[in-house]
Image 1 (spheres, rainbow, N blue to C red):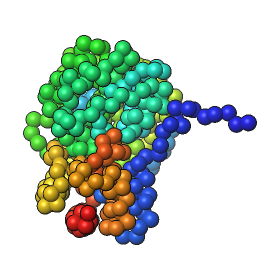
Image 2 (image 1 turned 90 degrees about the horizontal axis):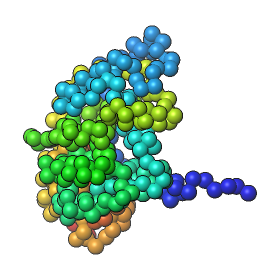
Image 3 (image 1 turned 30 degrees about the horizontal axis):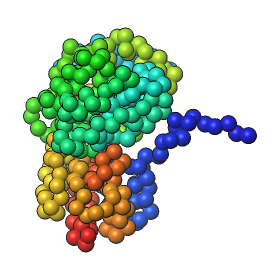
Image 4 (image 1 turned 30 degrees about the vertical axis):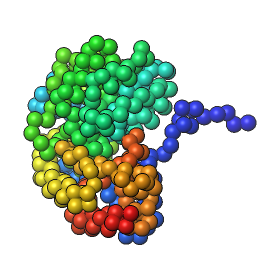
Length: 378
């Protein structure tokens, strides 16, 4: 008789985003406005560092947390952005996904609770549940995807261990304003909960005045974990490189989880990672900004309500008027219009769809045209 597997994992479903992309792949010529992956190649100056590393035989175990020179570079990079973490408070990870996994593995005990403002990337819930903890969802839609302090307080219980925030947000592209960041800080200060900041889109911002939580509230550094990634700003999704930073007592525990999860990031990518930090992603940002403007204009012409994205490369329009679930809407769009989008229920918010504009201009324009024609038939 086969014994049961991890009962927490048994409750989880495979990624809805990947499922939609798999369905789209079954329809020849389908334009996928679904996956959040830059359509640019990694800049040559970054890739060249890997070639050089392999040529000199850099294929052996590196230090678990990353080479000292790279951690120094990451510390300086963050300091330039107003976030003060020493090199010893930084860990190079196998992408932001592993950074989140190591953080929650180190942080959570069975029965702990993590507050997840929705809409949110489904990975957060999956990692929390896999660690035998409970995800508690805070619906931000009534507040235009901002965090209302009273609503946040209503989610807090004696079991609350952390809140995870993402700004710019996936899937909305919205940026948490000062009032939202302060609401999180007030609650964290009074309760002692951790603030896990998924800042992977912090270099993809289209407005002035953007602040990160750790930048605005350095007084809470002992309770803050900052997670970043090379994937989005430098088009390095396949490299699986990211990093995290936290105060020394917290980083020491996360380092244990990181060590036992993956041992280390890839040795021959580390010089390339350091090189990436010196590359200005502004040229790609300018392209995304132009695409955002075309998306917003197209959604307006379709009369689809949307909270204007201020960062990342997504829009999250409402489709409530059509009387379809977001799942039904997206499946119907694939089958009838050959255009793929992600259902809002994949992010915990029904009645919306996520549209990604990190695709070629040609595909974006054709995808928007197909979406407009599809909507006209509903």
